[in-house]
Length: 90
Image (cartoon, rainbow, N blue to C red; front, side, top):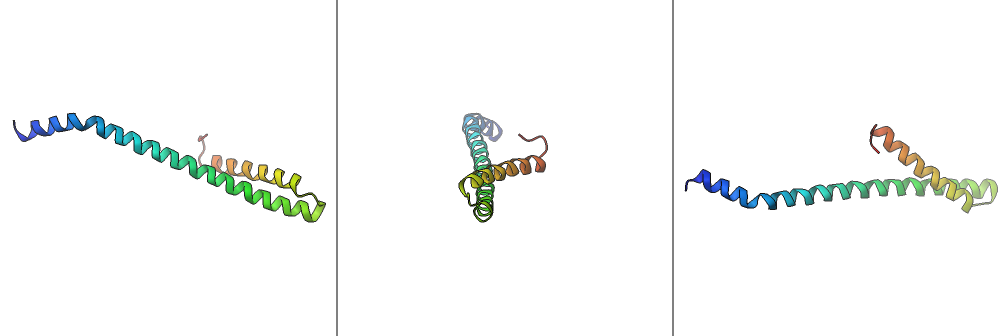
């Protein structure tokens, strides 16, 4: 058996392992991207809540109602910003 044949046999035996590692890396990257998007959405929602709650408190005396509306607006802005940054991405 020469070196070429030995390499071919080794590759054939290790190929399923390499495919499993690649699949694990792909899933890990996909999970990290999803987590980053969730954190960005949460940040926008928190900022929206804080701004709207402050406006609601000082202008109208109602914090919760305006805060929830601001959080929703912040989340909406985050989603729109993502879609404007990457057209065609859902």
